Structure formats: structure tokens, C-alpha cells
Amino acid sequence: MGFWLKKKKTAGWLVLSFAGEELQLAHSEPGADGRAVVTLCGTASRPVRDVAGLGQVAREMRLAHYPVSLVLRLDEYQMLVTEAPAVPPEELKAAVRWRVKDMLDYHIDDATLDVLDIPPDPNAPHRGHSLYVVAARNEVISRYIGLAQEADIPLQVIDIPEMASRNIANVVAEPGRGVAMLTFTDQGGLLTVSYGGELYLSRHLDVTWEDVNDEGPMREAHFDRVTLELQRSLDYVERQFSFVSVARLWLAPLPGAASLRDHLAANLYVPVEVLDMGRVFDFSRVPALATPENQARFFVPLGATLRREPTAL
Image (cartoon, rainbow, N blue to C red; front, side, top):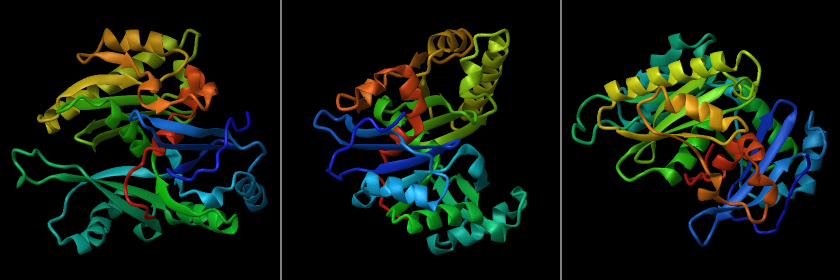
């Protein structure tokens, strides 16, 4: 499938995401009704296996005219949890490197780290709290930065799927309540729990998009695995963050969403709904995104276009 739409205006993030051999691109900009207007979404019209191929796509799509972010695949990084060290902000990353060095299966000097704060209970602000540490191999980050530079792509941000999920969750969140979001890719499932615009939980599930859409005899087993992981994860949130009351679990669109929703709703204590992506995005300029299949396929890059943080690698 090639690109569905392209336009000249450059407001908003253009997101690159690799899914297998496929390069996905998505762009949205703020809309008048509060929804993000999707102006471009699709896959590269040619294979992107080297700098030459990527450079040709960059020229065809005029990527130099956009602020660009790239989303890592689930297998290209780790999400680690550690207690927040009591150090000045300028010393935080160095202290965190010491904390997580034994959690990695490679040397800490070969890791690029970033930190996401997990805010504490607002009623107990002085109580110790935790951090998420995003760890990726230097070679992964360097490869993407090098590819972008050689292909003349103005890469400003390297992002992760958790942030894309959180961005969408923020739009549908109920005031003062937590929101859980569940989506699936070709690599596995991703569960996030957000509250007050912040990420409180990330769980990678060993169940893929193909597994949950399987019509064969293994489907119930896949559903049970998802259910068990969600039960454990929601119980963890309730124990660790008693101030985060999860209002509902949103299931990202996918062809078999109704069956999975019914299974989860019968086994979880929170309401479960399939997300109508039309609540978050205006797809009027990209009508191919009206189908659940395409919304599921591009859930991560679309969510990453909603990024509102400052531009920095």
C-alpha cells in the first residue's frame, strides 16, 4: 500500500515507524474541533533497505519540510523501573546509569538512556517514587541517526510506542481518572496505564496482532493469556498507585476487537471498550483510515504524531 495523502503545510510531527520491512509514515496537525487532522498516513511506495532507498522516499515526500520523529520497535529498547535517586537534576542520568547497569544484558557503556518520571501520590509528595528508564543499545540509536543524516531527514526525536499510546489515552481520559490502553503490533501487545497525562505502567505482552485475530483453536488461549496479564497489571496499579483509579480499559481497533472485548469484559473489573479513533483524529482527508484494520496497523505512528513535548533527541 502506498501513501494516501500528502499536503504542503508542515505544522505538526511527521512520524516514521518500521514494521518489519515496511516503513510507515504518519502526520497530523491540530484541528479546529480539538481532534488532530491526519494529513498523511501510509507506507513507503518502495522498499527502504538502505540509505539510497530512504533518501529517495525522503525526497519524494519532502521530509525536509517537517519536524520528524522516529518510533522504536518493541524489541529495540527496554523499559526498566528503578527508585528515583535523591540527586540534583543535572546528576540524574548519571545516577540512573549506576542504578540500572545490572538490569541490562549488555554493558552500560553500550546503552543510551532516557528517563520518564512516575509522579508520586499528590497527597504524599515527599514519599519516595520511581522512574521508568528507557534503555536502547547505542548501535540502534546511532544507526537511525546515521540513516537520517545520510538521507537528509531532519530527525529531531526518537520516541517509543508507550508515548504514542499515552498520547491517545490523554485525549480520551476522564478527568481525575486513570486510563488503560491496550494495543497490538506484529511484535506483541502493549498495555499502558496513564493518569494526569503521565505514564504509570507499561507492560509488553507476548501476544501479537496475528494471535488475537486468529480464528483457529488457539484463539481462546491467546485471549486467556492477555486476560491474565491484564489482571496482574491492573492489580499492580491498584497496589502501587492507590490514587490512580482506572476508569476503563480502551482496546485499540483491530478486526477481532469485539470478541476480545467481550472476553476481557467478562473477566476484568473495569469497563472495556473498543476505541473509536474518530474521537481522537479527523480522518476526513485520509478516508482509508476508516477501517479497523488500518487504524490498528497505524495506531503507533498516529499516536506519536500527537507528541507535544519540546523537540529534542
